[in-house]
Amino acid sequence: MAVTQRYTPFIKMTAADDQIDGYVDIEYLHLVAKAAIAGDDFEFQDGFGNTIWKEVADGANFSKIHVVKHRVWGFKIVTLDTAGAELYVNNDTYRDWSQRGGKNEKEA
Image (spheres, rainbow, N blue to C red):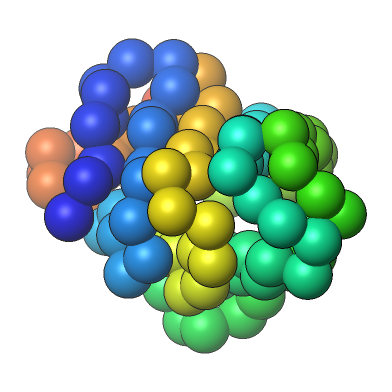
C-alpha cells in the first residue's frame, strides 16, 4: 500500500487497491500520470463500491482535476493503469472520527 501524507491537506495514493478507511471529506481529486498513454483507465470508488470518478487518459503528461465536495465512507483506487501515476486527494476538512471515537464538529 502506498498511501502517504495521511494527516495533511493532501493524501497521496500511488497504487491500485490503495484505500482509506473511515469518513473522508473530499474537496477534489487531482490525478497526475506523466507516463500515461491514450486509453489508460483510472477508476476511484467509495467504500461501498460506488464510482466517484472514472477517467480515460488522452495521452502522455495526463493531469486532471475532478471536483467532488462531499463526504464519503472509505475511498479506494480500483484501476490505475499507468505505472508511476499519483492521485492526490484534497482532504482539507478530513476527520477520521471512526478511529478517534469522537463526533464530527458539525454533528456535535
